[in-house]
Length: 218
Image 1 (tube, helix red, strand yellow):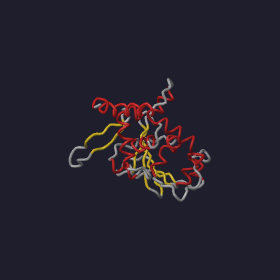
Image 2 (tube, helix red, strand yellow):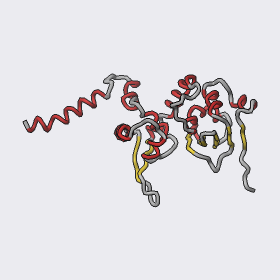
Image 3 (tube, rainbow, N blue to C red):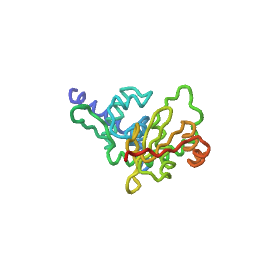
Image 4 (spheres, rainbow, N blue to C red):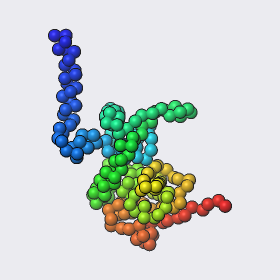
C-alpha cells in the first residue's frame, strides 16, 4: 500500500502532462503544446521588449493572476523559451528573459497581430492599453522609415524600435536617447496603420502623425 501511495502522485503528474499535449505528430500541434496555453504568447510579447522582473510582467499583463503567471513562466522555462537570471548589484533582482528559441516567436506574433488588427475597433471600457503593445503591429510601417532607431510617442506612453543587421528587429519601452526619428501619433492612428487602412505617409500628410528628427549636439 505504501508503495502504491508513493507512486500515485507521479501517475497523476504523468496524466496531467499528457493532457497538456495534443499528442499529434504535427509541427503546428507541437508548437501549440509549447505556446498554446492562455497568456503564454502575451508573456512572450512582453519579454520581446527585454528582460523583465516578475512584478513588471504582472503589472503589464492586467487580468493574469499571480499563480497563473508563475505557472506559465515555469512552463516556459521547461520548454526552454524563457530563462531566469539574477541581476548584479545594485539591482539585486531576478529577471526573466527570452531564449533564442523564445525570441524566434517574433514573426509568429507579427503574423498574429496583422491577422488580429482588423478586429481592433474602438477600445472597450474594460480594455487596458499600454503604448508598447502597438510596437509589433507597427513594425512593418516603421521599418519603411529606413531609420535604425525610431521612437514612438503616444498619449499612453513611449516605446522605441531598433533595426539591426540581417533584418533583426527589437523593441523596448520608453524613449531612446539615440533615436534617429521620432514619431508622434495616437492610438487610433496606430490602429489604422496596423490594419492597413492608412499608410504612414498618409498619416503624416493628413496631420495624424508627426515625424521629427532629433537635434544633435554639435
